[in-house]
Length: 293
Image 1 (cartoon, rainbow, N blue to C red):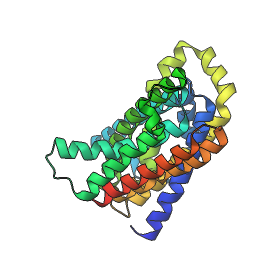
Image 2: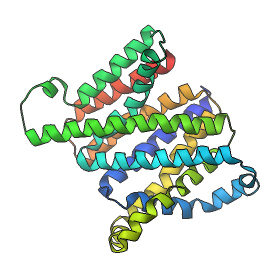
Image 3: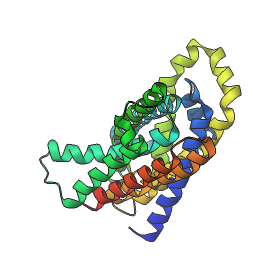
Image 4: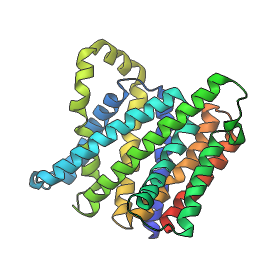
């Protein structure tokens, strides 16, 4: 991977970890996705106009279909992520979400496409599974000890994290196709995919405008921070994907798992920091092994 692409991916990983800490602190809620979508639509409009003024009118049905698909998958992903953060700890949901996508992709290639796994891919899958076990509390995961409510909270977090990871794999492929095959500008892919989420979110706002205004007063700072940082982090990844293979860029951005385990655990005071940092490191190494397989 070229040094510039690697620098972009590492920066993106730090930014991605940061906005996820903010999303967790915001407490989720029904209207946070709409607040973020509106924030991106307003704040990034000058940039989108600058890059897209002469380009977007030339888009045919396929670019718009791909961007719409990206927007829908991103919306479902963000909702699942927020539900996970409401139900469990950031240091559980986030690493599992980031590690599950590559694991599912590799397993599908082996089972469905009958690909022969290499030693690196087997070790990578084992490392990701081991990382999930460590994040879940290690051997205590199988012991019926401690607070039953805490165990349920942890297992629910694992479930939401895994579902989010599958959605991450889906939008990574869709957006990679957009920037590498269709040659669409990454900033335009992200901006219009975000803008196309708004019609899907309008009905729930129309049903309860009072609730939306309450969420606006309570969460506007969180939404503003996410609207600034989230597109920036993802656009950096998409630009890196134009310089290096997507199979190298996508795993490298999983360094964000370590940033979340270190920063999020400390700021939010979540327990089992040692095990969860070790699990995040194990999962990151496993993803890298899959990329090199």
